[in-house]
Length: 615
Image (cartoon, rainbow, N blue to C red; front, side, top):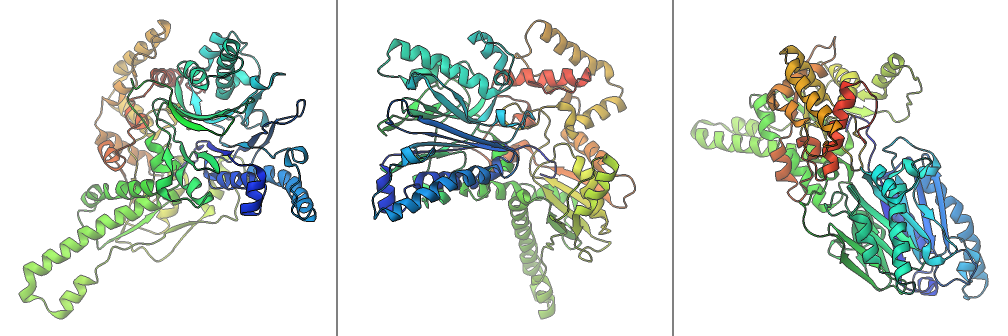
């Protein structure tokens, strides 16, 4: 993605099911759990670079000893900073163990972070709040161990105000500005109720159901309760991803399947997905179960942007889906090129577009081979050896035409100076494009288009191509997200901007004003959840008209090349990612009622010139 968007957060969870001495004897490392947690978090660092946190619960410690520990760090390189602090402790104890002739030191007494239940979190601040107070996990403490709760997650809730009102809590302070603040307080409310009913046996399932029935949003959250129970819960729509693995040594869960496979050297078939509306619950004694929390009365909507961009492509299924996203674009590209594959160079922009690029090239090579075979079969009596050799040597021309100079930093803050410097952060590969060539470059998605217009297209124009075609492996992004990705302001989207341009060109301001009045009326009557009125704006124009206008808007002044944009279709997205139908970014079909409210609110903010997010 050439635009700089914030990613989703990442979650890591480990429950050790054996005593520390077991791991010392089998793996030569009593801190096996902590080191695996470090790996899980590092393998998901793509999901969080604004901060990180770690929570540890110690089981069966003497009364009065601290049993729940937390450490949080904000800013870059947070995972390493956390484990550097812990490393001093572990190295000292490991040295003592070696000197004690095999007798294992009581780790819980000597190490703050030696515990059986481990939780790690990587954070991207979708609300722009990067200070340490907003880093997960959050903790609520109580003198009664069973009423202690630590939580972290990958999510956004849309109805935090309603949750605080339900709880009768003040909306002032740090917690009230955080989704996790609303979530942990809600869980704690029902935790307290369950323990009041039965102090000796906590019904975790009941607690989770009562709390999650109140949530509007997409989430995977992890909780550690002071009595020794813990859980990983996924929302009933399946919006956010979660995977787990179990054996007699541990239970592990994470936001991405390859992170578990790599960290534990586990085969694909041992990793399972936590079903939507279910929770992985681990009791104090280490017994675990996957339990249904919410009823199956909703349409499953796993996020398709996970597949296009956010999750790492080394997941087997995501790899194949991104390849297919590229293949689906072949016919559109060929149509734009008038089937001329001899005067075109293909490349890609960010690394996340690389797999879709391979898929597109595979499809183009198939097309070229079919053409060559057909030509030879039709003309074989008249073809010389040289003719055949020339035909067989036709290749799709692939070049890496743009590279980023990672040593450079954009330290200038004013826009003009910064844009000039950004143009030199990227280097081009000269003399691989002819003046008669079209340059086709695939991007995983186009959100704002700012980087494309201000930098990328200008840079590509240095190569003097006849035409530049930007291909997006995702459809047009038309609507804000409210489930964990930082795309909340409608006016930021190049697709929406293009529709505004078309409305002005066709003098359709009256029709536009009618939609605004619909939103204002719905706002007054508290009906913004009922319908996504913003969808009506896009109905004025065809997808082709909007794409053509986007192409015009993205072409910078002063460049020589013609510019065209090609988008994936929504049907192509569904074909490639058949199990992940969460497409509200592109269609406006939100899985929860709060999504409609967010879209309508974002539209009102745009019209009323309020620089606010829609939730």
